[in-house]
Image (cartoon, rainbow, N blue to C red; front, top):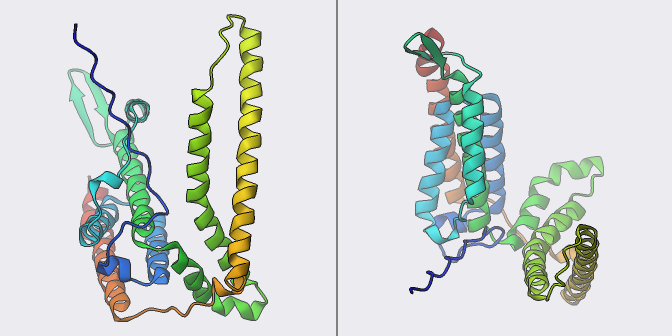
Length: 281
């Protein structure tokens, strides 16, 4: 009798933790990455065609190669997500639309399926774009970049520095809280459970465990906040978080030029040659 093979652990999502390295992508100014992400987001919002999506996907893949992003940072895709995508594709096919092909006497339209695939590809590209910023940007660089980008808003008496500090603290606390909640959940699973076949008793036990878990999570979050507050006070207060000098350099302007060139070519192709042929079809 052979023992069952051990189950391979599923890779978790690695976000808000930069991948170690000193590549060009890591050395870019955080504000440049935020501007590029915002510009690409506006482009894909108004022109979510196949050509702009493909162009942005190429940029993301090339940036990942330059930054030496390993495949291990990619999370494992659960089976239920594949099932939902398959169900969504089948459901979208029923919408019909051009192009169409005939199966005997039945005409099947692929317009709905193509739109579903386009939206799915757009979502994947935007997630990859955000992940690239997360994997190549130190959290400490975000607050000075946000403060510098929002400098014109200070004339309107908008507390830009406070917003930058709030964003920086949220980005710093998010990975720590995820780790703490993971430990709490693992500890909850190790607790022995009372075997009771009564559905009402099981529901009451589940509600009691959820209340205990939420109380423990709130306690951990408050403890982490207190420790972070003491550390910030010891380092000179919140003003030091956004006071670090930062700004674009030569490599940032080269990156801007490359992104504008690629996105401009993709937009021109979408509005002229490929867009015209798609309308004619």
